[in-house]
Length: 339
Image (cartoon, rainbow, N blue to C red; front, side, top):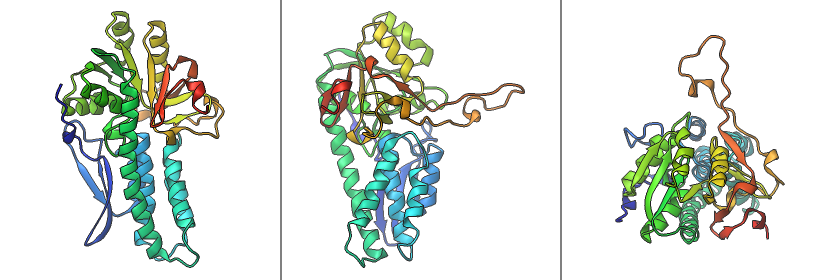
């Protein structure tokens, strides 16, 4: 299999030109029909992009959060109000811990500056930090891929849910990073991509990304996964994560929990791939994870009188259903994340 990872764009990227600092991102709402790049100098537009899922995926929204604060600093007149802006950014979406982690890291970068440093120095420091975080993200993802590929047998047929690919990161991906690394070793026969209702990240994003990279991919409806496993057509399930508790419970896109239960029933290994920044050491278990509730319009484009809609964006998969959690540091049993 010949991969074409050069066909995958950088999903989020900070830059600087003659007019100042900008943030460029793939507007994922336009995919798969159009690869649309948006550029902004307004930190509020970055926050909005995260809220409306133009930018999505835990590592990508973390980078967007840090970049938003860098944009704020680039066009502010003083440091007054930075923490207020940071709170607005960090709370744009509640479930993925990477957003808060990245904003806190950006604040710490400014907080560590010498007393008396001005807004210009802070802006330069934040710009450099985001550039460094982008490089770190790709390197981290590639290490996740290397560790995960070691778990994949030759000729594997892999099922994935939502999009934890390059589109969910700066570049390369977490769950799909494992796929790419394994494919480069000749181990991947095919990837099955769940459609991932109601927003269709698997149908619109994962299938597009895999095809563009040259990985054989078959799109399936969410309710087909159990039948596929029953036929013996799935050798492994690999998903990403938005938050991982200390005990190994994992929050990921809605529908992940059901897949984990089905995989256990059919003896299929269930892997979670995520950077260590997705692990939240403050939470003992998944009961403390806040689950984002999304608009009813994502499920029903036209309301039906008398019909209510329940639309959680994520669910929590208990650690007992997870075979390994793969980070840049290795592949661990859930209970061994913290040694």
